[in-house]
Length: 158
Image (cartoon, rainbow, N blue to C red; front, side):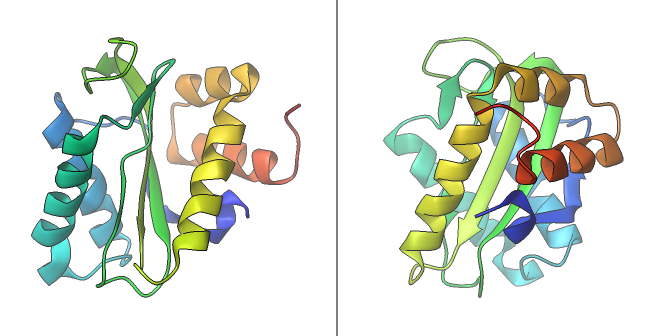
């Protein structure tokens, strides 16, 4: 699986505006809506599903990274978005550090394999310190999209 398989180019943000965890979730789900990845009438339901998943344990996995995700019956295929925060946001991360890199996923409940493959791909790429450093330094949506494409083309040493 590659980023191009699930990240919607129109749902990439080089500077998230939210200042807290709930705001990040809302802003990222809004970016999926703006990119036509989800239906308008499902916005609140998807935010609620992601928030409920966060209550089970933070998806702030450490090293400045969070991967909020959920399964939702309203989506027909796996969709995702990326956001970067230059200031860092408290996301109740496992290491208690601020989060700078966010990947959000929403997948259909009947496609658990795709959901897991996407999470695995994100995690594998984010283990690469060079990839993370460049992603944190990204100033534009195009910078981020170029990095994701480079990662898809195995340009970073994994």
